[in-house]
Image (cartoon, rainbow, N blue to C red; front, side, top):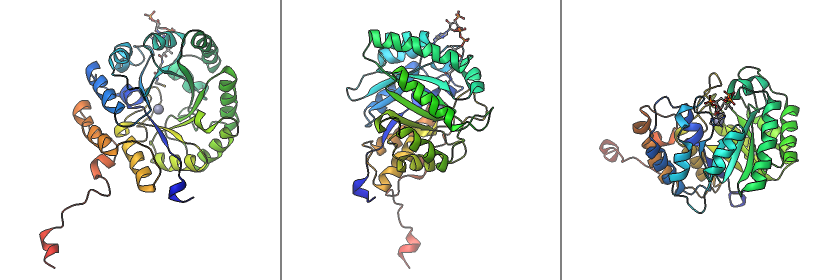
Length: 314
Ligand code: COA
Ligand code: ZN
């Protein structure tokens, strides 16, 4: 493959949802809205702007309705809301989410920890959500297989089980499917194998990969998935993120690090890296701590340093 033949890589920005859900400090609704509005003009076509889960489970995102009501909706951006059950779907539709991202884990144990129900109960709820959405709205449905590459409680997840869930989602009428590596347990060979198998069953545009960088393999996994044919990836500004109900969870792959890798490799993303860096550099002040992303600290390759005086004199 030469550089000119690279296909576009689509990034869904998930910091407003996956990123903020684990933050211990309350982020004001107005600050969430300002962040989403700024991301909306950075070139993304998809932003996961919040979740419609129990406010007791995720207090940090309890203002989902207010956020969705008050953001400036950019016509090129689909605003996605994460949904665990029928009540969440009703809230998301009332808040005019453009897409509902339903979530269930491949691991029974993590599903119980995260959603307090079995996988079978989650799928029953999804059946009701499909009926609700098909009957009453223009919103699309995506369904996530969390812990698809490994579970912090159960360890290895059988690939056939993941494939079975993907098939079930498609049979139920989900337009999109996400494979999520909730606690960064995936490796590039495993990713290539699973992506290859999944793309035999659904179109490229219907598959999203969601990686966490918990063990430093995030971008390696992106590249393995891209080379196996995947084109859509979740990433979070600053490398924020993590599931509060998965022990050891840490940040998503960092959006600006991913976009920088793509820019350097000649893979188009249509995302404005300078805007991202500026936004990412504002995160420590917003959240009260440093963030994991590396590019905002290091600068781009083209951000050269002045040559020291002593060097000029040699
Ligand atoms: N939005 C808001 N409130 C909700 C809700 C939703 N989607 N679903 C349930 N609730 C409320 C119920 O109305 C009830 O309220 P009450 O105590 O005032 O009567 C309460 O939550 C308990 O309802 P129940 O159906 O018994 O939920 P639960 O306690 O078994 O929890 C979930 C199930 C799915 C709602 C909860 O585990 C959850 O929201 N998990 C999401 C976790 C998450 O976001 N993880 C990270 C992303 S993957
Ligand atoms: Zn995640």
